[in-house]
Image 1 (tube, rainbow, N blue to C red):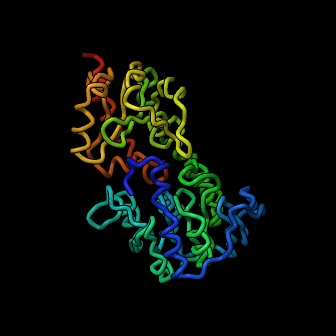
Image 2: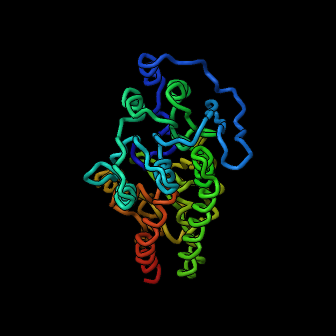
Image 3: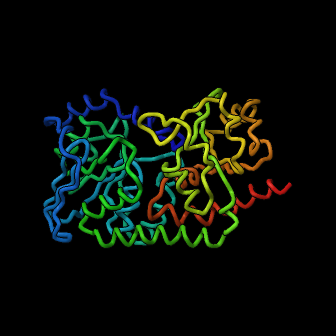
Length: 348
């Protein structure tokens, strides 16, 4: 699914119809969605067994997993960074390279000398038969949109680590924590988080001028629409972690339920008048043309000045939409020249 989708739209992809299809493939077990979602993992270091609870149910992992399958976003990258290349990953075609894999994943696996993971279809057409063939020891899906029925089927195949809150709402550091516990590598996971924070701090230190720059990260669902990502949404957090500050007006918009964003409507475009820079993306060139020709959109001061950061590289858009150990170093060196170019427009 494409990264311009808000979490509310992403969640709709995993439908009950797909879950019924899954039930025909593997006998489903009873729903466990009302279980405690607190972490009850073994406290004696990285000893197994370890139990990780989620909003959908419990995953009891008896021993250190060797064969890992990942769903959603970010789990494959974190698993690779922790030393375990997944045997299978949910396909993500938008922004992938000629191998069908996201370039930072391809580069990391190639560097390790490992075999690229097998890809399978996800979302409403989740290919359970392919997952069965992969014989996973664990299925990692802490930042995903799997449904209760999908979880029940997957957890019957292998312990499945789902999201602790709502679908597509797990914070990046929490995702790393969960995967570290699932793989028995909590100390290494802590190190990954520290390294990500160090990389952001180093980038911000190189660009002290960013501290005085405000921004809004916006999106559209087609002509006539306008949405704003809240500060905690990962693509907005990626930008603020580089040293820029979120326009205070963004915090005033009412969050759309189940998302880290606010669909404010094009009629409220004028409220972004104090944003120095606008960050955004478009689904394709046609979408870009449709959106940019709208008078209310075009009159946003930053848009009018051309102080806009909007990449037409699908790989970059995907990478900058998620914070994990592989995307952060891949994004930072590409982001700062784009930001600097947009800042030049403010001086004219």
